[in-house]
Structures are given as C-alpha cells and as structure tokens.
Length: 120
Image (cartoon, rainbow, N blue to C red):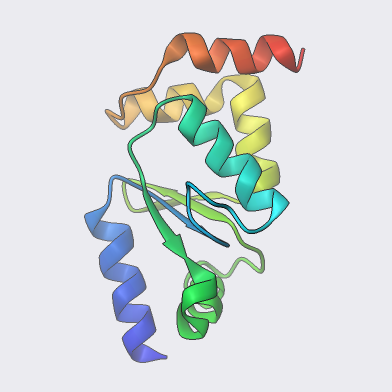
C-alpha cells in the first residue's frame, strides 16, 4: 500500500486538478463519477482523471489517503475538495467557481452559470 500512497501523493501534488473516479472522464463507470466529471467537463476544466477501477491498490489507497470513504474524490492544488455531493453543492452555490478562481484554474464562467440556472 505504501507504493499506492506514494503514487497517489505524487499525483495529487503534481496535478493542479485531479479527479479520482470510477472510469475515465470520457467514460465514467458510475453515476457519481459521471456527475462530477460532467461538471468539470462542461466547465472546461483541464484536469487529470485517475481510474480507480484499473488498480485496486489505488481504489482503496485513495480512501485511506483522504480518510474519505467514497469515490469520486476531487483535489485542487493538492487539497481534497470532496466527493459528488460536496462538489455538486459547491457548484450550485458558486463556491467551486471561487475555489477555481482563487487557485488560478481556468474555467468557463458562463457554463458554470448555466449549470446553476438549470438547477435553480
């Protein structure tokens, strides 16, 4: 598990935005991963995806790393943001926009607003 922890730590620290998910950003393999990837894709976020289904050590290791029991898990600038429910709430409240802006992450502000309008 140490090797997995090292790989996870390097990925989190070396990626501005990274999503540990079931499947890939182009082909999510669960509804929760699909929702978070869909938000990031729609907002035009440049992010790295890590398919936890491809490596059991990473699948369990990310839960241990964050002390968070579920997947997907979003990290921005090395910090754990949250899973599907938290990312959804942050998107709808505008907090995700603020986080991306404060972190220097480019995103489509109009797309973010359209998500809120559609869910308002």
